[in-house]
Length: 583
Ligand SMILES: O=C1O[C@H]([C@@H](O)CO)C(O)=C1O
Image 1 (tube, rainbow, N blue to C red):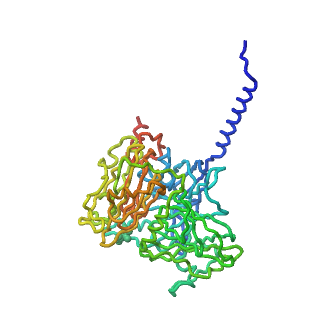
Image 2: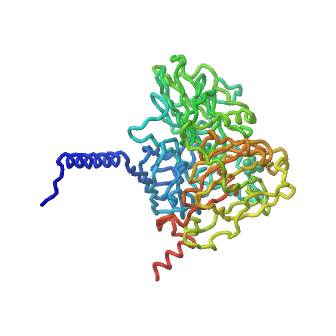
Image 3: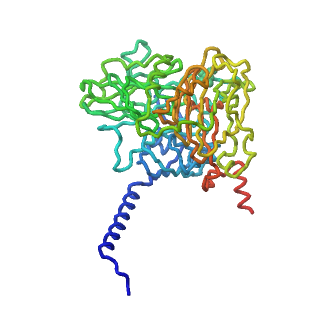
């Protein structure tokens, strides 16, 4: 006797089964793998007029824009065509969950890829947002190795704000001295400081020998630019229709400059920072530090028979660089019609009050992950400028970072304890250190010890600024964390004290990957050490990182799955591979 099964139940089970197949395949169909084949090479280019040598990708500067959807996998086969130096690319803002070897940091997550060789970066972009990528070996970012990475919301999902069109601009700064010469200058005894950039670039385009706004300039030396529009240094014009709302994505890959950006006569509504939505707020101009990204909305509600300036200026350092300019061109007005008034002015370079007011307006949109209410460990990092055998350095708790020959991810994973300093760097600095004055002893030492974070614990980092070498000088430093976002719990003046903890914003702190410290101030960050890997945390000013301004965090490294051999094929892990093969 067979079973008696209700035919209705069979039909119901079958349709449930079919439905689940359809759902499974449709979600599979939605997430894509985006393939790219890139070749990095030096090439002649004119980012700001005079011919320079830049680092390009597939013959382009800046490199190609990657566009993907949340949930997609990005697969970049990167071939090094540089002939005489290694290369890596860091995907700034992508947390690399489960793929720490794809973070693209030489000496930390992988061995630099040698000339002629190819490294495959394969990682998931799990969250919509405005990101970018850049070199993370030596000073290759200063050489122009960067581009945009835009992640749209997953298919069928919506952004929490409306817009009719969008633009993307990547900001950078440019010197007429090669990155190699800059590197030698910074490493020399005495150090030769690189100075301020010659030009500010918008999507790799700026003007050095002329100005788009010469007719508004009080200095008679500025020549009006005579451009056909097809020059490599001609500005990229943003063409808009009247009475629409646009999303402007902005990221800063500058080597040094902190910037301010404004669009003449247009309000900016800030809605996203570093891939996280913000409680929208309206401003006339935004500050953007190296390593940060924003989305702002603007409405084209001005007289459509005019065009308007998009202008960017240096903040926080005495500006010696003319503004970076491009034009917002209202249709059907001709793009060659210059705006009828001067470019918008930014706050004075040393008006830190306006910068702090801007930073304090940045709050998370409801629905953003909230910080744990307490932390398991507090690491206080004192930022100082020092000397080491006559060389100028930056140090953190009196350790100036010099990266090891063997990348940490492999050396820690395989327990090669001789690959870097065994001594753990300090969690604090001497309590009587006066952050308002030059240090009584300005000497420092170098090191490459690691902050080992217990897996899944909550860590607070207090970034403490201080006086630099010269009296009455303290500089802005934008700090960028790899592998995580952190909550910015607050900013304060002078030395951080225990009583500041009660002022932390635990309600709606912004969730970001880059945070600035203001002169003589502190910034409090919190993050959860839940991403197995080894992660750089450093000042995003390229020469400052070169001068030692960074630390290294490691967490849950034993949980890291198979690291690709190409990431390990140097230093002590390279020897390990060779020994295994020869056994
Ligand atoms: O690291 C730096 O060095 C110079 C200056 O402090 C010494 O020349 C400067 O402005 C920096 O940011």
